[in-house]
Structures are given as C-alpha cells and as structure tokens.
Length: 120
Image (cartoon, rainbow, N blue to C red):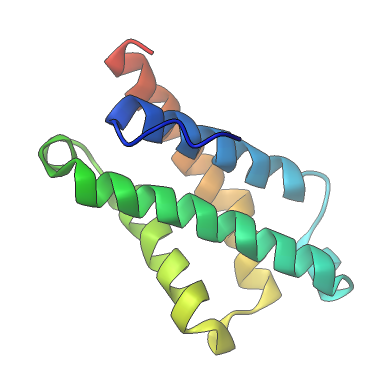
C-alpha cells in the first residue's frame, strides 16, 4: 500500500485499501480469536490506527468536502485512532474486532460511494 498523496481522491483510495486489508484480516474469525493471539491483536491495532490516521488527514486537509458529506464514519475512525494511540489501556480485543468487522466495513462501503462520486 503506497501513500499516493494528499489530494482527496488519493487519500480516499488509500483509506479504502487499508480498510479492505483490515476487513480481510478479521474475515472468518470472531472476537475470541484475538484473545488467543497477541500478535494478531497488535497487527489489527496497527491496521485500525492507519485507517484512522488517513481519516484524520481527510478531515484536516479537505474541510470543504467534509462539510458537504456525512463524515460520521471518518470522525469515528479518527477518534478510534486517537484512542489507540493515547488511551490504549482501555482497548479490549472485542472492541478492536467490532471496529474492524462492523465499523470499518461500513466505512469501506461509504468510501466506495465517495470515490464513485469523484469519478475514480
């Protein structure tokens, strides 16, 4: 996954790429799986952090676009990134799994719509 720039289309493309990777990572598993694998828990944490970091870049760099879109999923992704980076003691494996399996999948669907609207 290559960082392809800071313009909106490139950031959304990166977001979708990392979001899909995150969804694939948890595919076929349940939340209990993370309890048995610290390495997988740490890997999933990093994937979610990257998704949130890209979401934060979109929020910061493209406020005009954000003002015209339903960006709740972007905001939630960025907040989760901050929680992982700064409030890590409150993170539970079941929460990580839910974010990846449910929230990031919903974000991926929204990003696909946004990219279609941009003509990507």
